[in-house]
Image 1: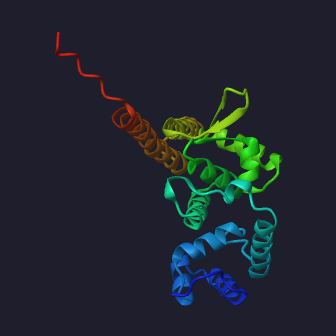
Image 2 (image 1 turned 180 degrees about the vertical axis):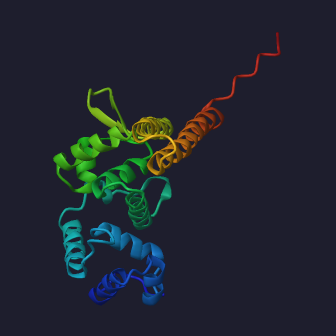
Image 3 (image 1 turned 60 degrees about the vertical axis):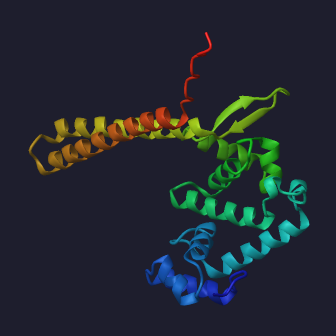
Length: 243
């Protein structure tokens, strides 16, 4: 199986495959490449509906040149815990692609992946700018989006700097925010039943939407509560039996 960067010819084949409606796995097999490589390539360059081979190739060359010209200072430092620097960087790209495939815009996915892979689980805006080599405005916009989704929270450190934090409770809060959002759709759908009339085709459709999503949101909230209690509650200290 070939490795290394995709060639311009391979990118043209990807574009043709997308135009023909082929799945990423089918395109990957035709190029003898991993499916994850094709998924990452497409999602980093506009998605399946906007992918263009020439633009993708130029963007990749630009990113490679920019990394050589402006390598973050901490990228030269030894990786903690004996980690392999290149392996960490490649995994960060994979995780970013997964976040993008779940619906997160590119910059929001990059920030989320960057925060998730830090041992501290938190970074300042300046640290994110340095690590991702983007503008402060891009970081600010990404954080605002992630915060609105319940995926990031803010706190102040001992130097009064604002830090952006992703931890176990953030994912719980995100699940609960999703459940609340779904519950709003349920309420709105049921209002529509009254407007369009129970028993009508449109009314029945909305009633089915409400019933399905009501069950899903309730199950999601219950599962999140149970998981939080089971996974993140510290066991009580056993009483001292020496008394």
